[in-house]
Image (cartoon, rainbow, N blue to C red; front, side):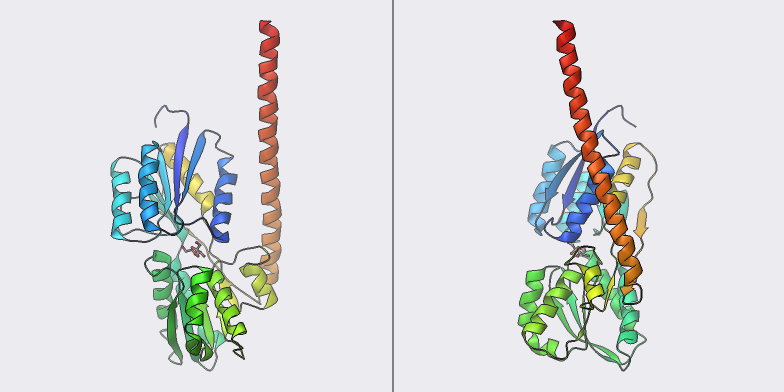
Length: 327
Ligand code: FRU
């Protein structure tokens, strides 16, 4: 352990533009309130590997004590850049997405291979007579997309009547998913079930199918299961999505693990977060729990603000007192 009193944690996020990653950042900030000696330097690469590369360099120049990173791709350039950081002696915590080398202290995230398998095993229960599945991929060069796909294949391996009739590349994004869906309406018209690597893309493709008048609509299955009026949990509640799989952000855990590492304590190589299948059968209980959790989190955020205000008042009063005493 060093004698440094404050620590700067760099957080390199592959994109900050979607709800799941906004939740992740909030999860981090709530946890950070417990560590007043930590400062977070946040960089959003907006889905660009080149930008993320530059931002990693920038964070190192800003003298970070630890790097938390969700790498946009598993690509060799990003892996090499992270290797370099790690070799400088700066601890690295990978969050949600992986690289291809061992240059990191801990990985935190749900098991995407397992989630893919769970999806694959759910499909034959949803399509009892078999049928055609269209898979909407996340960014094909990112580890969650690769693992979700692999898991899906393993999960449906014992279901000969299930056929993957199309694979479209939505790159995790609503707009890209929309474009590829519009360009592949004939594939979607034949589909019995659409499995998208996240809820955002599932909902986007569903909208395209509706607009194109496809009827009956295929079933839609996604991943993430976020709270909020436009997100997965509500869409299961409405019956818009047939199933989704919880994908926890790991934001809180990333700060906890960073704190352990910075305190010189041993951190595990891998922190696997749990996922569960969410559908009509359990949505009410999960929604109730999630609403309660959200409420508690909002209370904690308000408390944190209040503590901040009190600290400011205290600091200004202390100054005033100092002025009085020295006059
Ligand atoms: C958010 C997201 C999630 C997905 C995860 C995979 O940016 O696309 O929807 O589960 O990233 O890394």
